[in-house]
Length: 479
Ligand code: ADP
Image (cartoon, rainbow, N blue to C red):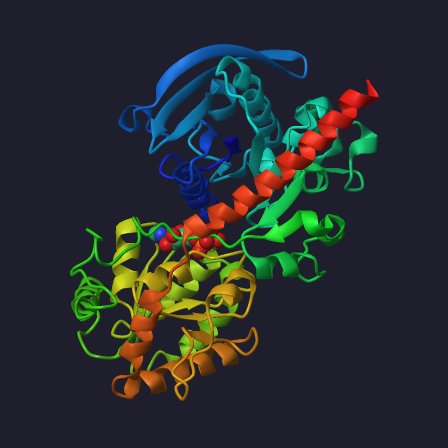
């Protein structure tokens, strides 16, 4: 089976969030399962082509609107996956992926329409005969419009975060060749709404988020589009790449450790306290790594932190995001230098050391399609404290000190007082000898394998391919 996989971000070439991790790990897992996988992404100005060994393959031409554009296909092969890059100066040779410090690029609709058309256009010259096309998010959601209906080529659209829809003025729809009657979302041109309605199947990144997406509260206005897809919409949980996130083999951390020999974790904690200028005591160390945004629960995290900060507890936070939270957290870190260390930065190595050095990991997100942070925290034995939503619900279960079951602490509702209560429960368990280490080791033993998720995608591809064969026969018969 041959798959064409389109993503606007792929690790290590370009990343702004979890999409980039999936854009790499899922194709790797599909290739390992024996599929032929071709991944397409735009070649942004920031991609390090020389260092990554990306080479030019071909120069081609393609029209968009009244203009003809020259573009190059570049490529490289890694772990059995072929990566192709669409290089086009006007659209992609820029510093940002989606925008600059001034905001999103105003021509993003055109940029990603070109990307999708060019990826499909290049298939013939690359001699790729796709059996299925896998799309990711709004940047690739118009592909069902660009493939001929007669080809009956199945498409799967994965939605990584429903809040980002690629919605534009209806005038721009002409670049996609969409007529007014094809605009599904009132008078606006909404790329994700089009993809949700027209892809052969739609998936999202956890079963719980799939359910939430069909409700008014989480549906971001697209809940009815999703409900209409019936059995052709479902959640498949993301996995974690354990070759990157494993305390047994992580070069970034102070000491290696594992579930069967967890002692090194204490060394990692001491090293983290030292690095962050915190006293090297046995206070419970609680961390947060992520975007400083409302979605990630900042509005409840800040007041809960203010309540607990003077106790026998230490907080470490790493993140960038809203200027307001930068200010509030900076002031708090200045006031409580012995209890709170803050780094307003994006630093992958430090993130590894934080996961390894913490006892508890905070993820009180308002909504969370899947979430990587809690899976990474598990792997490093940092016990997650999470809101009961989306992928967090699918991966974390409440710890019971009596039954000795469960893998974390869940908020009873989305509020600062619920977060404070969960943290107080964790503190009391931390204070009781033995229990916390046992819980931390159980966390380390959790596994979220990409292999299992990839098999679910393969089953879906197989089902769609067999349906498309039937549809193609019917079209043949009608001729
Ligand atoms: P998102 O909604 O941002 O995609 P996820 O939890 O799915 O959230 O993924 C976030 C990923 O980005 C994790 O791998 C996390 O470690 C990493 N990350 C987030 N913020 C930072 C940061 N400031 N420095 C380093 N890594 C970060």
